[in-house]
Image (tube, rainbow, N blue to C red; front, side):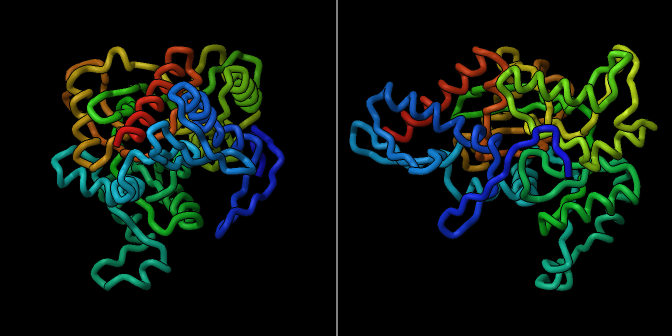
Length: 358
């Protein structure tokens, strides 16, 4: 499989596990440790680093307290709350029980999982298709526990459903089928009672110039990301991109008219080439309150709250909580500009000061 961002792969063996790393992964996983190194010096703390790659370590504060961190994960949230937020099905069921609007959906299981379930709980890939038909196409089909928008797909037909479901079951034992909701996709990052950042996420797209192929437009976009200090993993052979092209009777060699915009993916994750528009200064108090309330109700202190709505800057009318994230990464957001990078640095300073004092 060919990727736009080709990098040399190598394998690193950790105790009890093996990690496949690339040069891009190395840069990504060192983002927060670099911030912590800077901030620790500012507050008089010392850091014992993981010796080979510096992905994590232990902070010793001036008062003698110690705390570990790993990549962008710091000891700020309770583990059970993080685990529930990672399981999209569980998180959605709790949010619904707490009175929040969540997507209408259902979980379905691989054959291996169904073998261990009681008869009244078994739901297989075919049951997922039947449920999708009751919702009406298009629907969203996504893995239950994978992150960064991996395999999240808007499917329009039986063929696309089974193609997506089979791909998901290669990597996750549980998939979710959800009703499709139109609107704008926002991420709100909360720390305790404060909204740290809010931004609209726009799915990967290209704009035609009348001469370049879609393949060339994607390559140019990747170069722009790199110029701006951002790595985005864009797999041009992703079946979701191929399906979107086929739906528009296009292929990678097609040339878009000048000014024509084409969305290549339906999920808006920044990791897969989505773009962000910062609305932190303009978020309406209704959504500010909603995000803080969700974070507290789910037992989290730091949380990324993903909301689908019409406009985050206007009073709250209709919304759907798409997901929550107990370990939100802000590397892509920080690459938007100096003010965003400063917000991210300030966030981590607040977090390590909390770890020092509690």
